[in-house]
Image (tube, rainbow, N blue to C red; front, top):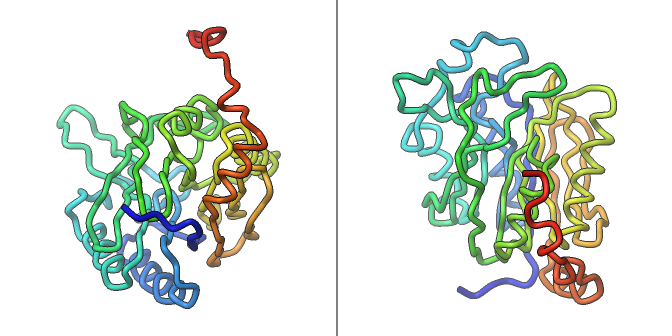
Length: 276
């Protein structure tokens, strides 16, 4: 696979609601508008397919869940193929288990041919700051396996998982140059500071690009951001719906890793079992 040394990523910071058909129409508009930037990949937020306000009854949230071969994913695949653009987006996926009434919080990666390359079930759930995501969401049982793309080797994790440095380290250990983070970062005191600080830290300590695409609805802060391997913000958004455009350079990754070989200089024999 020939890899481009510089690529264009568009982060579609959206204000999703609980209705997949409405969010799909917003995706159509965003994909059409993004074409003026000639994107290689368009990234949508966590749970983009259907994002409900905090406190929504479980049965309401579950009523919109779909499968990977359902109408929402099928249409998103068609948009990727129509525009010849890779797409990443979040959804509520049905769990085929009669003994478990939860959904998966799923991120889907689609290539420019409209094919599902891979998908990921969020593993670390947001049982924090008074929320309990695990009441509605079934956790995945394995971390994302980074994929080779025409834009570099890409890793992925979702939202709350940025608070676990082991997750980002796993992606870097598996060769990621770029980590995508679909998110629905809940508003609250200190949350904006945490968001930017954690994303920047994960970028610096792993010498990777971090691309965080957030929801910008009544419960989420927006503030999507792209941070380069030295911790420099490449592009950042405010709190409203918008498209955020960033150029990502693999030459920059190589240059930073040559200057800052922190990953290579690890001594895992000293701390491989920490925290167990």
